[in-house]
Image 1 (cartoon, rainbow, N blue to C red):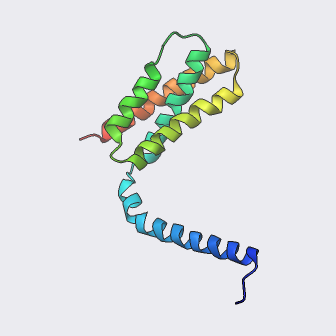
Image 2 (cartoon, one colour; image 1 turned 90 degrees about the vertical axis):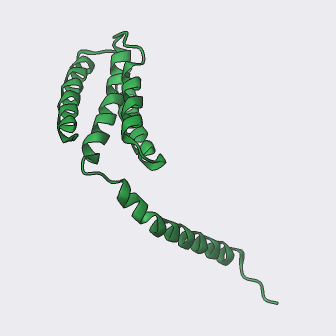
Image 3 (cartoon, one colour; image 1 turned 135 degrees about the horizontal axis):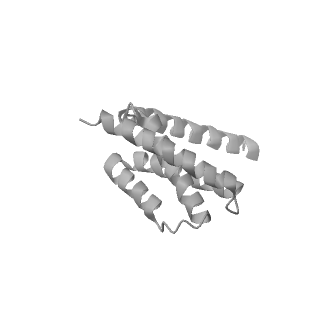
Length: 134
């Protein structure tokens, strides 16, 4: 009996795993397409803004407590019909939060200015999304 070299077996396993993952991805494609909504870009941006505002307001001692996180929870509850959608919204919120936590470690005038811009953009997005509602 001839045995295959260890690296060949490993490459074969990787190829098999890749095929299984590709098949699973293709099988899930229709489900992902159904999860897409025409306003996804706006809603994901709103989630990101909520994360950034939550971090920056807390950093600048606004004493808001968890208000921005609570708004995000409300958004997720009203908008997410699946685990995939909830994960996408949560990821956007966390990106906003983490992005600014890496940039700002103290409250500066620039951070305060960013809060103002993000609040204004959030209001615009919210109004635009509300107009879409039936």
